[in-house]
Image 1 (spheres, helix red, strand yellow):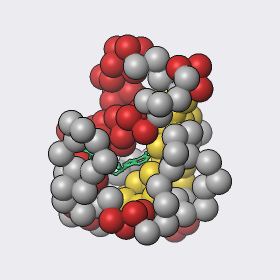
Image 2 (cartoon, protein in one colour):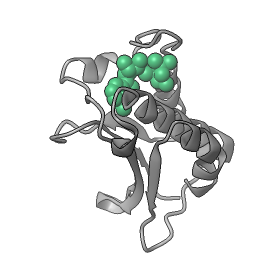
Image 3 (cartoon, rainbow, N blue to C red):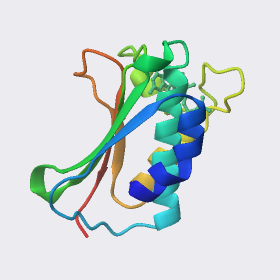
Image 4 (cartoon, rainbow, N blue to C red):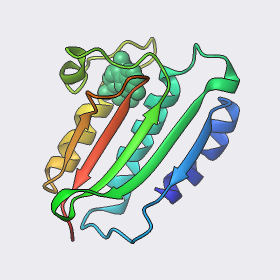
Length: 142
Ligand SMILES: Nc1ncnc2c1ncn2[C@@H]1O[C@H](COP(=O)(O)OP(=O)(O)O)[C@@H](O)[C@H]1O
Ligand SMILES: [Mg+2]
């Protein structure tokens, strides 16, 4: 999480998007490929930032956090305050080539989900949020 945030820092400064990082108090080891995990987090951060492009710069905020879930599950969430995703598209957006951007390919979420599923993990959008979107990555304990 920290290395990916560091990697996109300059881009987020250019996009005038504030990123706050909230790591869990305890370390949460996972068995995964570091570069693939960075790729997942990178896509989620860029999606969150893209979703807030129409907001005034002083409102563009992303929160990235990790926490211990049920049964030792490792959770990472990326939350934004953009327009969010309506209930039906919430499953559609994971299909290849589904995108709403002029320069998007629409493969990001499909690739992220399959990388995570190959490790026994999951990627969903939180259906409970009242504002913006929150992506939830779950991986089993190491
Ligand atoms: N945080 C978000 N808020 C709103 N819509 C989102 C968010 N993340 C993804 N989406 C929607 O899902 C689509 C697919 O995302 P993705 O697979 O990463 O492809 P791309 O980023 O190339 O468009 C996006 O084009 C956008 O419509
Ligand atoms: Mg994307």
